[in-house]
Image 1 (cartoon, one colour):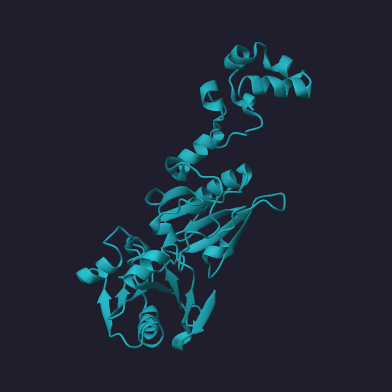
Image 2 (image 1 turned 45 degrees about the horizontal axis):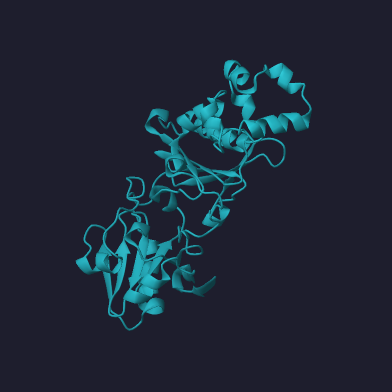
Amino acid sequence: SSGINAEYGGSVEQTEEEAAVEAEENSCKLFHVKGSTEDCCKGIEVVPKASMLNSNDVFVLSYDITTYVWYGKGCSSLEMKVGDYIATTIVNKSAPMLGIHEGSEPAQFWALLGGKEEYADSITLATAEPIYPARLFHVSNAKGYIAIEEIVDFAQEDLIEEDVIILDCRDEVFVWIGAGANEDERSGGLELATEYINSDPTGRDPDAVTIYQIRQGHEPPNFRAHFAGWDFRFRTPKNKIAAEDGITLASDALAQLERENYPYADLSDGKCPVGVDPCSKENYLDEDEFLLVFGMDRAKFQNLAKWRKINLKKEKKLF
């Protein structure tokens, strides 16, 4: 992507839009302005939809005859300054600029965005200069053991699909599971997030924190809001996950991972519950059902030749 340097250290980085056709139809562009220092504060073009807004930042909505600069309740003075500069100097020099604060939007503002929609407006996001800003941690077992490392000045590009990411938003903690993350990383990330909150030296009350597991491709608004210029097409997972499995409580996800047995109906005909090894589904049957399905006990089955076991699993639709 290309960047245009601006005063105050700001820049505009334009990315291809998922809704390019709609943007052309109403001739508007939306830029997400985010950054805590002059060196990193920037504006990135995003899909012109109301759902892209968030209370923590500034957004510049450029239209043929007007440029709106929307100030979220929790935005910083630097973001306001860079947003104003982008609106008057870079995006549309000829159109008058109109600054609007969150909650006082005119009807045309919402109309240009295709109508008013829900967006990320949690109390944490609406707090200017929070005492505890969001923190991002990378979890991986690439070295043979679970390791965790904090990433500063994080961006969407830091969401590595082979690993697990923990995003600490103070009252909410998200454990992001990349499409290629293995089960050790997944369980390790969930356990680390819980331990991290329970041992927080800042005195945070663990009971006041909600920990979520989110799957790649199912990121909620309050997660996306912490990344400048979220791109929905970035590293889109090939394997689609059902919406009900996309976001779950971490406690429920851990309980599912620790589950040892599933009924045959949940394992056969191509079904594979989260956390189950698709190549060893028979190991998740309890002893009685194993005997019923295969007509032999587990010990006898294990003594069969490999090709014979594979054929039996295919026959029983467990392969």
